[in-house]
Image (cartoon, rainbow, N blue to C red):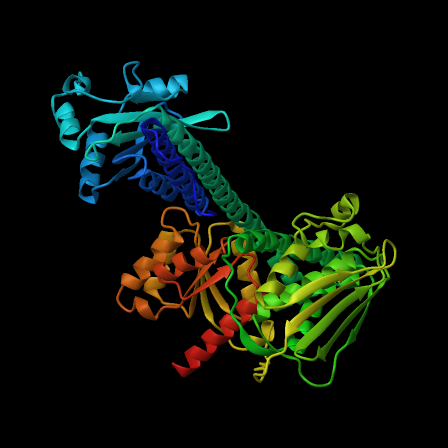
Length: 580
């Protein structure tokens, strides 16, 4: 009795039997429809890809709702665009698509799609005779409709959030079924769900396009700001190496260097947060000793710590702290934490940096006696653009993304970071936990600075910006190298081919013949493959490095050029010259 759907009394009245059968058929159809709608909701919710959603929608409609289906979208220019097609016979899909492309519906009043779009109401044609498919178009169109079996159809508007996006045309042909009022109710329910999925996909595509435009703008902004920043930092380096006798001039030089390097870090942070958001950062992990990385981070933050007159206490164990990590990104993590502590601690404060082994982890702590963190901010502080005190953040030059970078980079290394504080005025502590590596750390002692370039190297500098060219030339000569200059691509190319130097530094944005073209022509010339080319550019993302490599450059230097990196490059070229 539990599985019985109804009862019939004996003897059975014919009318009652007919009613019962009809009711059971309606129930079965309703259950079928609900299963169809549930599956449609699940499938349509699986993707935010615009075209994939449209294709799924058309395929879902066939065969439950139609023998073939066409989705038309109406653009901002009021033109109708066939967006997706499905047919119960896959071999006919191309035929339907070709017909829709050759004879797309217009927005004239006579067009069904136009009527549906303008009124927002569906149109149903239960049965079509030959005369119903006659059209004012060329005779080929009605012939194709008859061939496809255009016998009964319904056209339903695609509307979501008060906007009509287009229409779905459902056609019944080979199955012999005809559209009735209950079919329209089901079709409208299905299309409502579909329209929401399409609109979500459209909004997602628009958001992705906005992100792409933002990233392009940030890359361009970084490039435009790095170009003037490069000669400023080079000029500072020249003043440092020549020496300044006047104490006030030395202080002024230090201010310019601190602020210039701070601006460079802000540019890098902006680009990094964009790359991480899009999953564009790739870690280059190697076995290393965390103690070496922490020493580099302290050196990176040294100027800010000195400027704020902080006392830095470092407590590290005697033995190594082996981790598997990207040394550059790991240094960035701890330099950001030290800089954060320095900025939000009153001048003359105390900052403690400690690290230790704890089971299978290496635990590093950066603790200060600064302004502290309110309890409600302890978890939010790692979110983008979150700052404890906006007026203080402005005075200290923060963007509110440094800690976001820290958390993302730590997580990419398989670790965790947490913020601790007893409240405002009680200082704060940031704890980073990283997996302890079982591999031996490969610690390299790298020479940096001008001492690496102990011998002379013949350098050709191709740069059209006067300040950048003169400052870098003077710095290279100060290091003892022979430098020739060229102010455009054609002049630079001629000098390269006339007397190949040990190293060619080529600005990418040259007038006339740009840096890419210079590199390609050098590589195409006899003996051009042996010339060492280094690209100079304010663009430093992965795609930019790929382009310079494809053009023929041996290496890619991002402005403002890291002077240690440049010095190592020069030393390598000197060494190559000796061995060659």
